Image 1 (cartoon, rainbow, N blue to C red):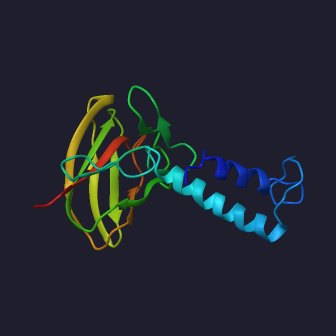
Image 2: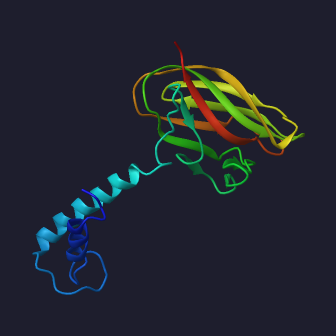
Image 3: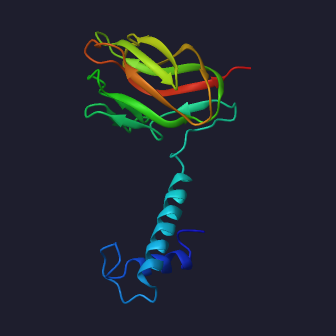
Length: 192
């Protein structure tokens, strides 16, 4: 069902009746309270499903079968690490070793992958990091690339993803120098 359909809009209107859980003003409802509750759950599920289909909410799947983990499908854990939208969306200000990036269900399918990291790092910055997916993990080191706007892609190794829908993490391993790195993307390339 389309969330913009007349039925979805009517369900939403009835769920917003004065005695419903949603506190919005609306006219009297023709539906009983239990039916409104069921309709509200159904509508919420519908809206969540529609949101999950929007571009940028799922890991990107390029034509070559690789999985691109970027800013649009990630969760940031921390306060200083954040997404800078321009010139291309990337993670920046990674100065706290306790902060990290998570890609829920980022490894959409099981298999063996070569993992590439596209990052930038200024002089007097850098440090060790860990990329993990399930029980598999790879360790690497960010080194200067010539500046925060000079991107470099490196292979950090091969990883075996045991099952579909595994969450991936990129974490600092120890204390970085002034900052760990800026991250543009992590790419998982299937092994042939």
